[in-house]
Image: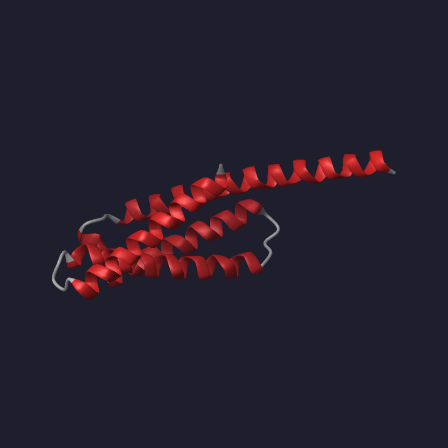
Length: 133
C-alpha cells in the first residue's frame, strides 16, 4: 500500500512540475503565478530532502529528536522560501509550519509501517532457517 501511495504522489509531483515547465516554455504569460508557485515548491522540496538526507547521516539515537529536527528544518526552509518568494501574502506562517508537521508525521507513520513489515519478514526468515537446520 505504501508503495502505491508513494508512486501516486511521485507521479503527481513529477506531472505538476513537468506541466509547469511546459506551460512556462510554450505558453509564456499563461497563468505564470501557478507555474512559479509549483517551481518554487519543487525547489523547496529539493532543499528539504537534501537537508533530511544530511540529518539521517547524523544517525541520531532518538527517533523523537530526529523527527523534531526534520520538522524544524522543514519549517525553516519553508519560512525561508516564503520570505524569498512572498508566500506570506497568501499563506500564513503557521499554515506552512502545520504543513511541515503533518507531512513529517505522515512520513513517520509510513516508515513505522515499513519497519514493522521488515521486522516481520526478518522474523519469518529466521523461523524458516531454524526449521531447515
